[in-house]
Image (cartoon, rainbow over all chains, first blue to last red; front, side, top):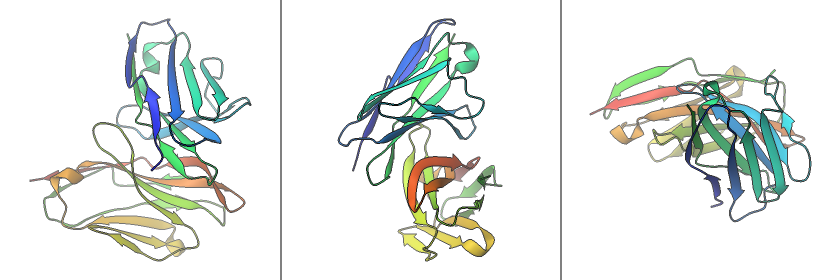
Length: 114
Length: 118
């Protein structure tokens, strides 16, 4: 089946720094990628929808200047958490859809901001 | 607005018991997709099933079965003869559609934590 990877799988950063998370579709071209955030013992909440070559669409309440999303190619989307704070510590999961709108999830990235 | 409700926050059963996880959804779309995912402690989502809104046939896959009832907007998941390895968080999700195509955007329920004790 199709595979979506995320890098890094976990990251610890200091408050005030920025961290970039990559999401790659390894064996298919992703027309759309999605970024979800999951706080401990909570559900997944969609942050933004990312389409290759266009600006991401953010969900209500998600700061686009804080969570920068770039979808530079059909196989790569990146999420940059800028000026991270401890409250940004979370599990970030991406998903990618192929041309048939089949959806595949990445393994997630655990971010800890100290 | 679309919404998915999993009223059971936590369920604890003893191995070999059957267990049903409830899922109720709300949508105005006539075409939509429903999903169940398993999330073990590692965090990676494991796809279990996708069901099209036009297909109300129940499905069985090994020890897993799903009961989809549009009349009650429910898509319940039953594990028969539960095992310790079934312990995980289970999410029900609803997709948005564009025309008859699944857009990929998912609305997740709150999740049900299943603990199967030996």
